[in-house]
Length: 382
Ligand SMILES: NC(=O)c1ccc[n+]([C@@H]2O[C@H](COP(=O)([O-])OP(=O)(O)OC[C@H]3O[C@@H](n4cnc5c(N)ncnc54)[C@H](O)[C@@H]3O)[C@@H](O)[C@H]2O)c1
Image (cartoon, rainbow, N blue to C red; front, top):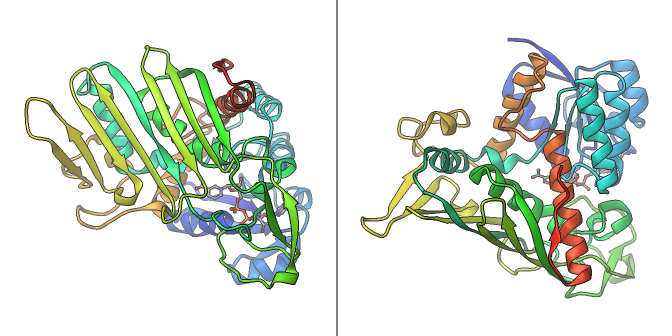
């Protein structure tokens, strides 16, 4: 087993999840982390040898095989480009970048320089999502007619809930769709093997202003502040998005995305109907996949490596009845990505690469244009 040296930039919510998942692989040495401040303290807290406050210095001194980019969206482009120019493989968090132009340039550079890249669309690695993909590929659903569902969260429900994601100059022009809707369209396209060709989207911002904390708070940390610790700021990105899609085979899609749906903590759902049967998956019950029929009993496929397809088995580490969930998708995604990185294999894999990241940004861009124009918008071929 090849041992690979890795550096991580940005240790907030997701950077910590990357550290944990990488350690579960067994063949990755996390040699350094980069944070904007208190770098060595952060490195010590995670049991990593060295901490840097400048990602360039870290990459130049450490010369890692891989860098993970776990910073807010506005820095993905410059870190990914700097790493690729030094021949370093890149695992970047989604969305790939803040703008479509940045994503296009990153995908182009990776392709023309043969760099192994990955974008952490981790939801692809739920075993029941891969089982659904396998069922669609086998023809069990027939021709796909409808693709629906959505992604709901409530962590931005209150006016005091705040994050860099609310600032378009950091996050991008779309918030809810780019942040979580991108996961939904990613699994919709991955499972069906179909590409969305056009979109009609509607945005709503329920809270036109919010109270921004005057001191930094990590995402999802639930830290409580006092009234005087806040500043009122206007909000211009969407809390909510509904989007209709047309797919290349004529299938119709629709999704509802919200970061203000009380009680829905982090729920992604996918429902497909085809000319032979249907299926439904819900991340709140992620080890089950519902299969629907007109002429026989419906079924529930539970996560059990002895019963599922070879494709789903690639993302299962535990026997049936031993629940695998969100952190396991990171481990399985990284396992697949590191296999390709060790083999220097830039061919298509189940994980998303920079060309897929670019495609998702093209969809985000079309969603924003549609919400602004109030009409159908074609999705750029990416
Ligand atoms: N795949 C998933 O399930 C998932 C989940 C959460 C977040 N994400 C993505 O991960 C990224 C980070 O999100 P988060 O929730 O962890 O944010 P966060 O705010 O919790 O953490 C980001 C960290 O990056 C640090 N940082 C910012 N700029 C930096 C720089 N130039 N150099 C070094 N450190 C820097 C910040 O100080 C902070 O500690 C985003 O792109 C987000 O969309 C993906």
